[in-house]
Image (tube, rainbow, N blue to C red; front, side, top):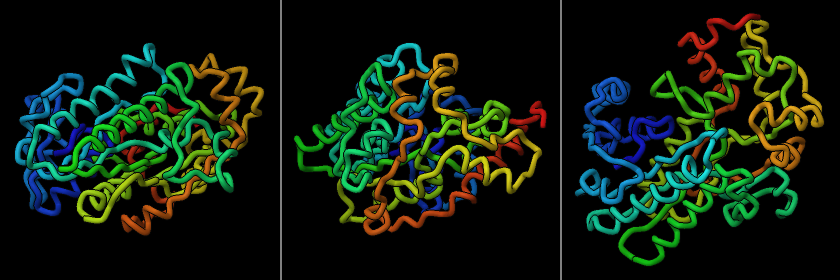
Length: 344
């Protein structure tokens, strides 16, 4: 079973499972909405596997029971990734925390389930880039937990942290099923659904739509290709000795570096940023862009570093070059006329 099957990351996980000839149970909000399922159906039609849809609601207890029936392996990927929210508790924390509790309650009721692979985030490890200064050699590992995010400061990161902690607590109260956690950084690369609504899409789109033409803020971020992330999930599900948390991140990079890669490929067709915006300017303008100044203070100019060696050794992840990931992602946006009205 794959929760959030129509999502950006889950789409590639579902494809990987179907290509192996497996049967995938996909709980979705509305199984009758053919339009929202057409991309998964197209993938299934070309595969050796089979997909079955079930009606489910992340916030409704028991709604995953039917979808989970007879499954041995559960991938729980469903959780919102949005940066600007009106009500962090309602929009971020409740879906992440209550959703995780509801899915795992169904796991506890479903005798056939042997393993759960949970999509958490590096945000459950690092709250702000400045946190890395306190870690050995300035690099985060799976041992670290985000202790700095709250409902008011970095609420998305807070939601991922409380949801993952809850999952471990539930897992440790029983012995039938084991838990393997995937902690990705910012996910980039083309989607199964080319009209993605993920926050990753929004962030990378801004490199080419003129939003950053005056310059890019000096944010350092980790990135990983969505296809490599799907492979990490698949291996986490099927490698018997897989256990614990796994940082899935190819490289530390920055918005300016990513823009440079795109400019090298596309030249001056799009208004890519070519310089760094001074931190004081980013700080001043933050509220206008929907960001809090504390977030700017604790992230801009600070390196964001993680150790991904466990993912390579234990899950066999082979990271593709960031250049390929970002170009494939941007090209998909071009092919879908995302930049149709953008002036050079």
